[in-house]
Image (cartoon, rainbow, N blue to C red; front, side):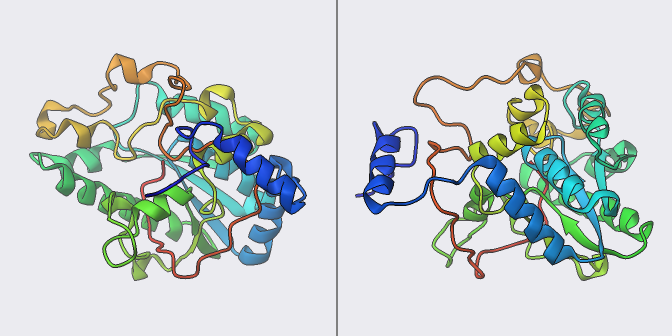
Length: 288
């Protein structure tokens, strides 16, 4: 039997945790602003004088990380948004309009032709994931070569990604292959930076709000990192570059029916930071 008071499905789970903290005399100061200050200090210590290359997908995780890193390292950050032709309608323009005014040094790379050529005729979803992951790495390699003193590749990995990527033999079943490629390619010559990897989705959203990320970006509908192509599972000659996602996917995200959690979410509770797990898996992922 398992008991998870932290999830939304558990009646009065949040109250149970709150009562436990009160009994223990724990100071409930784990606010978004407190965590932002702590993460900024951690990033500055870890990064030093090196430049950071950030993989931006337009999702809440990588967008929030972009704002956090802009505060932490300023002009030493280069955020890269790849237009691979598998985006939602108007997503490229939305990402640029949301992040650039907030001080994020954002570079958009038009790689639609390269992605479509690599996916031409492929219908197996798992093969598509691997192809798309490879194409992402190649684009980041090219962008890294343009930067002087680039030492870090940042990505918006969050705690559910770590769990999903555990794989057999690590107390977990592999769920998403693009989250556990097994580390960065040696040819990339960059170290991995994942400041959000101990946070859940709802915690990242709180940080996004505190950092000034627009509401529609914070609460947008979840979208697969590989775009609309992998779920389709059909040959890509039927999927022209820039083809928009189906209408319902483009709509403003909903919080969801009562009692139903979105991916990576839990009932928020003011708890102490989780201890870092040195054995937890890392690896380049398609940011979500």
